[in-house]
Image 1 (cartoon, rainbow, N blue to C red):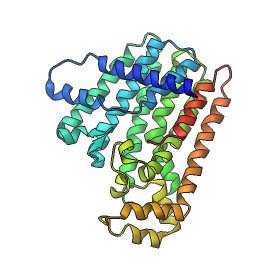
Image 2: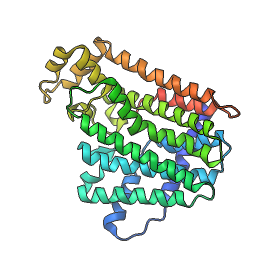
Image 3: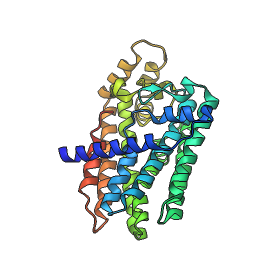
Length: 319
């Protein structure tokens, strides 16, 4: 595993290097200074790493893979810049959110610019640029749909687990699906192979998000780069909140009655643990990671080793 960790570290370093090398103009400062700032954060780069690993499984051209990887990371950062405004999050990747350091108008424009740069990168691909741009745009639309559902679900006590899973498949799973399938599209793989890579990425993304919900409660705030419990404070319907409300409505209502209680997070953690909600949620995440591995098994003539190790990495992450 150490050699795989070294590979992941190498890919992350190369992605960070090439992000810094993107030729942003100096002016207008109002646009490009916050863009540089947004991309300076120490993100995990899981999505571009997945692009490269899926590309290695398909023996894809490394230079083209890097363009896709950078575009995906730019898209991800575009969504974060805008989501932080919508979700009132003031911290991102261990630094101030763009809207917090500047203002909402600056952040909106910076996000738009970041997305435009991603599209320019993909349009310069030498092979199958149209098909890849179509996948990229479809994933972008699904991410937007997922964010819209997330906002619609806030403080809606009727949201079910199935509705939540649909939302996170769009908001998180669709982009990881695109990360896995665009390298297969790049090399001209047939539709069945592309579909299985997409299913792999989507299942991985759903597992990723459920695991992220766990870390939102049980993680280390320094590692997470944001305050814990912010989703619950904003009234978001996470999987654990839905389980708590449906299974233990009265007790859950009592716990969250005072959102300013000084020991609120401690009470929430204890409640989720004692009622078995933590273990139920963890088991559900594991089931999606298993589905991701099964989708890989349906793809013949590829080396699955690195992608399976990546699933393990995502499943066991602590940040």
